[in-house]
Image 1 (spheres, rainbow, N blue to C red):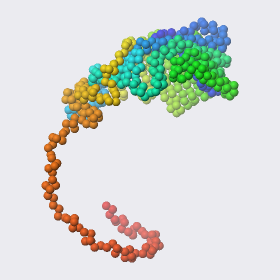
Image 2: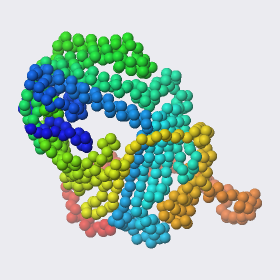
Image 3: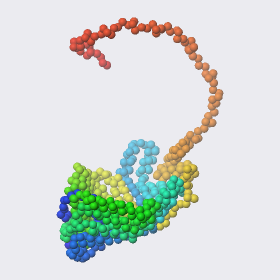
Image 4: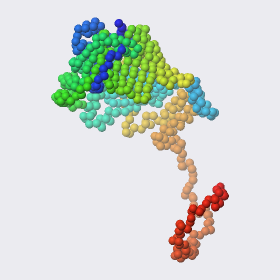
Length: 637
């Protein structure tokens, strides 16, 4: 008999049934949508998460002594218990992290190779100017380029600092801080000024919003900052169980195949197969049962009518009345009985510990299969979805473990009518380093047809996660890209005071925060850090500052320095009489009467051409010959 994964180092946990030859599939009717999809999702989530807690002996006894409906109900209820527990614990950890605060660090670094630098220098051509030579020296001196950000959140306070570096020397940074509850935001560039720039969005919104809208905004912000006030982890556990349990008894059409095999990727596992026969009417009845449960749900009712009452504008009576109207609608539809007679069979695969490890549904119009399991040292996950013969998706993951590390391959295939897209991912030495933070070691190689393979290495020292990618295209090395990630508790987060900041208003003048001289010095220092000479840095600083000044004021230093008073020319001294232009022609002497042409004397009758005498018949075109003319002798040049 196959053994099962029970290794806390594996993430995600793949404890499930061993192997799978897909159980006999029935082809009936159309796939029932809606609530039946919810059955699959809820039971799948519970089975995957809760697998390790099953009891092998209990499952054997229950399977041997129970009717199909009883065994199915027992499986669902166990799944419900484990799912509610797991979801509640995960939510509690989330609330705890929010209370303690969190800090994340991310950095992206590029280390160019000599070949990569050559591509840039070749683009500059053979220009031998001093400016080009200096730029080439700057490029040649770059060993690494980095951008990154540190971000922290604690209660309603946030802070972040982004930066860019060359050769691990910081060039420029941008810092951000905020009090989210008051909607007051701050930012600064420390290399330009240590003083913060602030913006109070809360005051502006309060001026624009009415009292009701403002109150709603306050409520949403309050629960977003502390979700535990809206829903506790205990209440969440209750809700999960409350809405999963009805799946245990919503249909009487249950069958159980106590011993079967299913194929999952490269392995085959033993399992039991529960078969549910679903029709449209059954799904509507389940929907009505959920509505009845919702109507009497005091947890949901309190959230809707009390905690969010100002948003929903609904009291307890209205809450119940609205749901009852929906229940009445379902009752009417069920009573009318205008449902399709077609049914669909849903197969639920249960491992030998009584935990759900997969689902199958095979219809004329499509197929769905999902299962995961273990057989000895081999683990597998498989998912198949086909809408029809022309569209579908296949996913398959096969791993083998030595008890600590995992090696294997993942294959993906997507069919879209005449096109098929395929890719595979080779996984080597996968090893979890920190399960809570998600740090791990592994080698990943992505293979796509007609594309150079992409190899990525994941490494962790327990303090952070590093991801390395060597850029190699057509046998040319272009350098290495490294992405580093780290997560931790943040402690306190400080937010500046508006009293000490330059607060932006309608009357703000940026030069009260930073002068043009401050900007010029900032640009100069930045250029020097990049590796430019003092002379070039000074020229760049002046140019950039002039451009900024022009954008701000519509002028710059050059025109501001120009003064008309420097030119001592007196236009009042100029006189036309000083210039003796002598033109001999006197227009006053010209007279129309000197021209003795009388247009009244002109008469058409003086021209004796009679158009009525012209006749086409006088011309015989048939007798015309090109050879009779000197056309060929004509010089067209």
